[in-house]
Image (cartoon, rainbow, N blue to C red; front, side, top):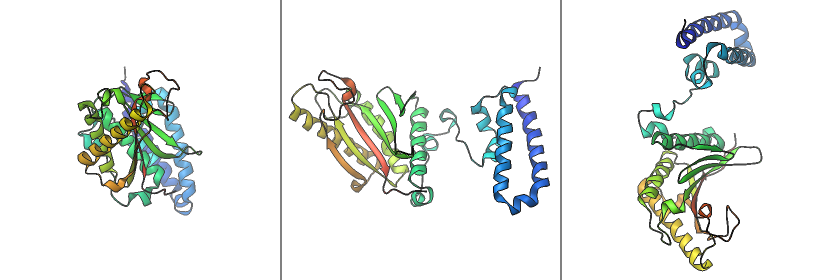
Length: 270
């Protein structure tokens, strides 16, 4: 019986041959009408995708094929567990890329890079409505009314990151912050806002001071580890229990957190 891999290889050879034949026949039209080329490519993509079930291939396998990447004109990133290093998983962008890509695409590359970096280190994310969650950390998308990515939010569990009633970072917190610092260094045209939050247990003024001290501790760690300039921190503030996730006066772990909101240094629309 022919294996799935053999069927994939046979199909790719036939597909590439037919695709080249089509290009040869239509080459004059391709040169005169670039939009026609795109329409034909999209039609071929649909044929390729519709044939996938017959080939016993899943979408992840299709995305990694050379044929698919030639058709879509894109390079699909390898899964995090197939990458050679954390640096490869995280990726990076040079200064000046923001103007070229625009804010949405710039942040999308950073978001996917941060996700892969965590996954490379063994973090198992769970998909939720507005992003990803794992034990001790959440990676969320902040989008505008047109669903364009405008900021990314990293939320660190307060119980994981700080001893009760203190603002000194735990080793786990430093491990998580090292990833965020690396991301800010790799994507230099970004800025951050850091906010500390508590639940409603205890005196408000004490919680306000504690939440501010925790936000400052996070900012200082990011600066130290990633060599991040002070001016890239737009705001560092403590909010006590004024921005609850769960509206309760009881002890609530989800309200005890530190949030880092990352956006581009300016909005560039494309």
